[in-house]
Length: 269
Image 1 (cartoon, rainbow, N blue to C red):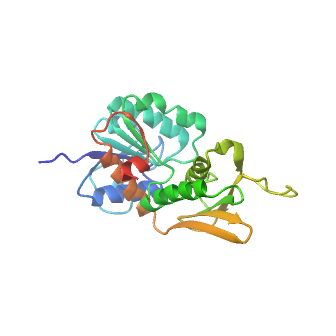
Image 2: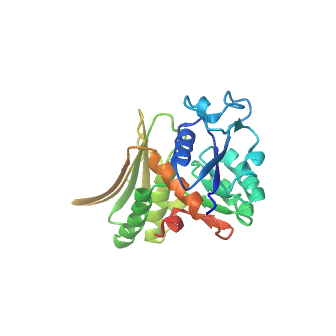
């Protein structure tokens, strides 16, 4: 019989954690073998299905990630940057595929994943959906085709609980636009306008963050020139798309050589 990979979900009580648990348990391609929460959380020691308000799943919530990872072939992690770095080291010890959907990581924190990636597969992306990753590729192509007569603005919207801005997806789109133009995003990024800012600098890539209600994720890339505008848009209405993409990444990473990958690799784009 074909081996079905065992999956551990970190941050089990969060919105994405619970969606990931449901996605894995509903799948016939993977098994839920562990769930992790921070020490002191009310869910520790409970069956995760019961903690979520449903039937028992036979998996107990733990605050010992290494013990959980030792039973698994993959870890799916949508938590916080500091926790993700800790999980990366432990997943590498266990030789688990580490799928990282955590956003808000600094350049230094991303660079700190390198030692773990020498021993295990890391798949990291600011967004796990097929549609968004197609949008990233389109953004790169359009930016390459248009000169600086077209101003580029990235506009993103998320629910009022989101703690980081711009979103990881917005930064992916900004990086794609910068790569298309052959420039360094850090040198042209414009993330804040308030008061008398002066005219827009030619060649900059602007970012705008909207936070409100229960918006799952909305991203526009605007190319604006005198007399015309091009708008590339992706609207997410169900965060299950991110969970399905993350599970796809966890399955794709089985048997791959250690290293860092992204959803472009997973989706063959």
